[in-house]
Image 1 (tube, rainbow, N blue to C red):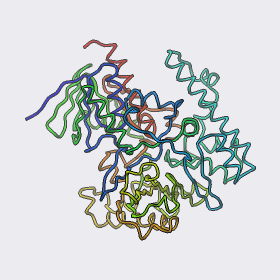
Image 2: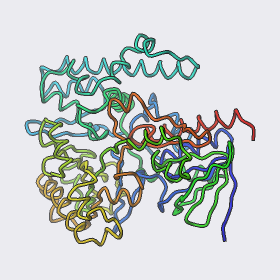
Image 3: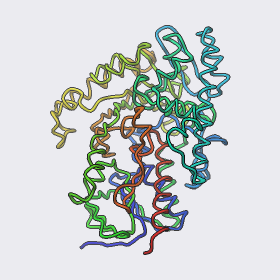
Image 4: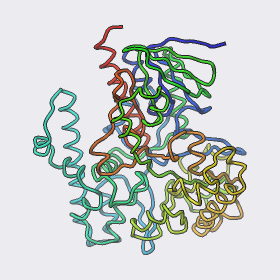
Length: 514
């Protein structure tokens, strides 16, 4: 028997973007229903348990949560600052290159001096680089204030009014940094976090990367006690506390627009939700596929279907029967870099040559000890990874029951062993203490998160894409979008996309009659 419920706004997908949209809409007085495919809320912001360990799926460090951080007001609105403990990571991370290692603090002045200890000739250049990054941040803040007050400028006026922003968002990171840093080693060092955005410096938007660095190095790097899943469940609880309905294990099968303030969303659970508007946290192309054929304008559909999904990840989750921090491995985040040429490394990623790519080693037990039993460690190894490695990870593209496919199992385990061997060379006490191994691939990401290609950043964060961001609105007036494909990669950006979607919904519903 079909269950039909009615609400103001139905949210398709309970990732951070969808949860944020729902909670922000509640604050503005709307009733909401959230429909989530997975058994947990949050999208990539969740965890899983295995043999006494709690493993983080994707989060390394949140940005923007310091007292002056851009993301803090959003998290306050979501109501989770009071229920989730956020721990500042200081130092932020350690990066190891073939010729030197640097432990990176968050403070800009301290960061400049730490770089100068290994590359003294780059002190002034790196300081000037961060001065330029601060100016980009100043321009973006001014642009945001102007937009909020209703001011709009044409392209030429924007270049004159926001020159640093215009220059950064029309440049790649390599073009931007070349103005200030001379050595190959220095350029690699200040681009360490390129993996957080999924593209090498030659293709990565300088504006996007500059804002990421500015946020981390002025408002801190943070990790929540209980992992990213603690945030997601806290938002879900707030939504439900205020009368909202969050349905897990509920996959949306169709969206039908019945009129300017009437949409019907069908699911695989014989549940139908009727609402005035819908916010989709799925990708734009996946959202369009849920609509009847011909519902979307062909030009818009062609445009979103041309989007290239950003890279995915391979992760190896290790339950370690030793306290690795007590052994001296006390890094929450450690970058094992194979060299200074990130363009070559990117090509190795695309080829699935995991011996030749940068690897992140995350010891979550340092910051969140409860994720492992006493005296033990939850360690996660991460590399960027392509969808089509070894003919779609040994499956030939046949994803039906892929977990049982011998080709998939062999490909996954071979790739995972490469990372484990690398980690064992870094941490001498590791190999004999490993008691739990769980390997995730891009196919795992699709299975649970349903993102095209297992992308963890939405569409690629190129110069062009960041200059021409997707809007939360669509050609259908009461269909809206949230998530990484709209706001850019990163968990705080996903939360921001939900806020933007909620604003767009409110503008629409508030200007029309029911």
